[in-house]
Amino acid sequence: MIDYTTLKHSSDGMPTWDAYLGILLKLAMNKQLWTADAIKTAAVDELNLPDELRNREYNSKSTGNVAKNRAGFALSDLKIAGYLRSPRRGEYEITKLGKDAWKKYGLNLSRTVVHDEPLYKQHQAKLAKIKSDNSDTSETLASFNEDLIQDWFNQKVDELKDQLLAKLAQMNPYAFEELMVELLNKMGYKGPNGQSIVTQKSNDNGIDGVIYQDALGLQKVYLQVKRYAPSNPVGRPEIASFSGAVKLKHTDRGVFITTSSFTTGAEEAAQNLNITTIDGEMLTNLMVQYGVGVEVEKTYHIYRINKDNFVD
Image 1 (cartoon, helix red, strand yellow):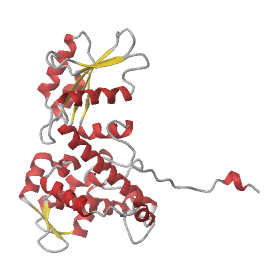
Image 2 (cartoon, rainbow, N blue to C red; image 1 turned 180 degrees about the vertical axis):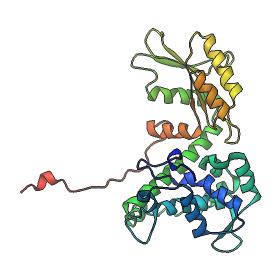
Image 3 (cartoon, rainbow, N blue to C red; image 1 turned 60 degrees about the vertical axis):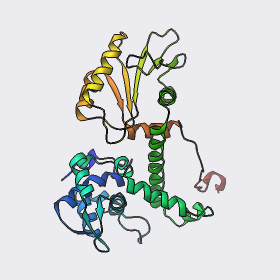
Image 4 (tube, one colour; image 1 turned 135 degrees about the vertical axis):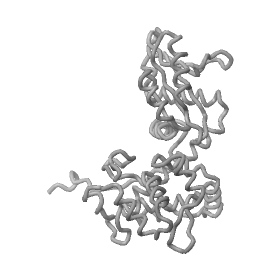
């Protein structure tokens, strides 16, 4: 059994759809052939969810169980990415690509890795090509109930984050550093009277940016950023090197940002050396939250009766 509380989850404690990616791959490794319903049920059972979460249903009976629905989203993405294949309709088995992914990532398999696969990108490109410019998203939303709208919204945000990571990987390195400094400023690192700079390319000694948290520059935060592919995590040596560069500046605080992830050794070293780590998933979460590199495309309002206007 897997402790569901350790997985990525919604505010109500329900594991998100991408929390099931590694679980489904684990099950596919242990049994040659699964039906869709059987593997989704087994994935939910692996989490030993409390009854309230395990039995939660959408308001519309036609859409069924919330947990199994989210497992279904993950199952679909694993197939699209080529980790699973369907020898017959409604049946699934793991591929060599899926076995390799399980060996490399295990239960830590993330949507970022899955969505970075060439087959997944090809599928998304085809969808974008055939999508009608005249489609009315509001009509689609009107046919959903509230829970499904939330799941739809979460998927759209996840798609945006994937696109954001792809754009970051293509940026000019210096522009990327400036964008990361802007993000930390928006997060409040700079303080009300501070300032921030991106260091010179030729002489940064492992420091990509400096944030002065007060007008006199008495409190400083140093920044290092790495535009790495999802398959290239930051390791312990890079954290140690950055910590050394920070200490040469006579301070002990630093922020290390990467578009990929951190190894367990890197995370442990960062914690011991007072280095804050921000991986690709956290980075895109923060960029969306603070509106850096993104903008609002559409806004939908859900109204309710104002009871104050109808007092007897």
